Amino acid sequence: MNILDKKIEEFTTIIQGKSLSEIIDDITKSFTNLPEATQQILVDYFKKYPYWGTLSPKEGNYQEIKNRAIALKDHIKDFHWLYDHLNDSRSRFILLAILNNWYQYDFKNLKKAKETIFPDYFDFDLFPVNNRHVILDLGAYIGDTVTNYISCFGDDSYQKIYCYEITPAIFKELTENMKKYPNIECRFKAVSDKSDTFSITLNPNSSSANRIGDEGEEKIEAIAIDDDIKEKITVIKMDIEGAEQRALQGCKNHIVKDYPILLISVYHNYEDLWKIPKMIYDMRPDYDFYLRYYGGDIFPTEITLLAIPQKF
Image (cartoon, rainbow, N blue to C red; front, side):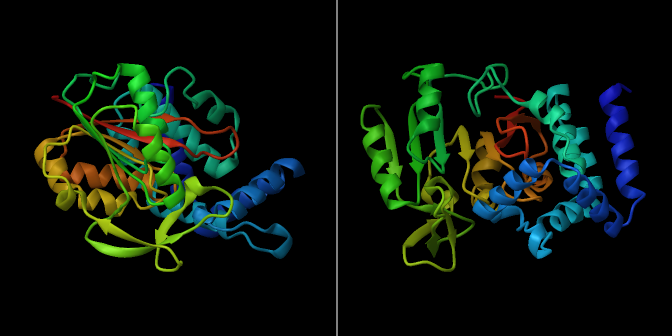
């Protein structure tokens, strides 16, 4: 047992030994002990991006803290399961840094966990490269992931790329940016577990954080990838603002039959971090799991799960 193994055991024991109200009190106390400027950064952040709940101490609103406490208390065994199924020590360190940040606002280890060498999604030691890749970029934004991929591996490193985006103005920019590359198709569609029609919920602070929902003036067609793409897929990347679980269900047949590389954002709530790996494991238990962290030093966002086929 190494030091990381000891730390996850200690963390699990602490959380299991406390009641939910005690965990809430612990997190709240840690929050109030932060410098006022840091507290305000967090308050402002959750106001802009309320995925995790709202936080307004002046109004007595600590819903975000309650949500993270519930996640820790109710799912500590699931987080331990994830730790046991991660395939390298870097990933296990990242998971511990995230959990300790959630519980006691540990900024030091979160900073140490950040990836500073490779671009988002493309760890050279993990990503199998060939010129036969058929890639799905779900949540393509303006094409930054595709551009990074081609700059890393070359314009001869794929057969086809499909880019899905839901925001009209962003989709227009995406199509313009992708024109210079061959064999890239842009689709103005949302991805889900079934065919449906959704509204686009606009985030006034960032168009990259627009989501599909039930309210909004803009309407968009949603599809399941299993219905929309018939050819074999070798890579699926998802960053779709909390809709990843439904999209995964809509990719199930491709995951089971094609066994693609999966690059999934797992930070848009307090559930995805453990739930998405378990969903993938239930579909095919023969993936190797890794975490990579590309976010900031105060609150963990930009967490990517890399599910790499054991045989590619």
